[in-house]
Figure 1 (spheres, rainbow, N blue to C red):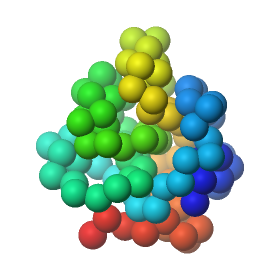
Figure 2 (cartoon, helix red, strand yellow):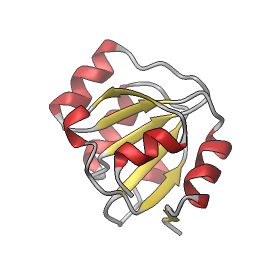
Figure 3 (cartoon, rainbow, N blue to C red):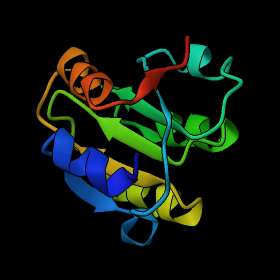
Figure 4 (cartoon, helix red, strand yellow):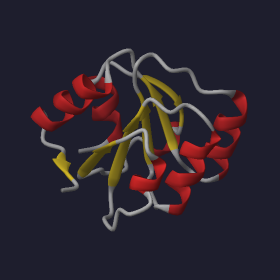
Length: 114
């Protein structure tokens, strides 16, 4: 599924990464524990989290995650946006809970990592 479809499915607000909307994501992982994210060994992953801080961006960078969805109406900071742009990471905000966003994306065809 393309990232632009993800934005539509979860009724998200694209914060940065407009040039990467055609990137494909195949799997999703939902966590607020970035140590769990660091254990992933997959490609084309979408991260869904409520942890809105620089650690989430740095973890995505180290894990080769190209897209982060910030659930529960969490807002990203300018510092987070700058770091995401530097690393070509798409940031999306959405008002849904992590559970609901993950469920919508699962129903639309995103597979779980495990």
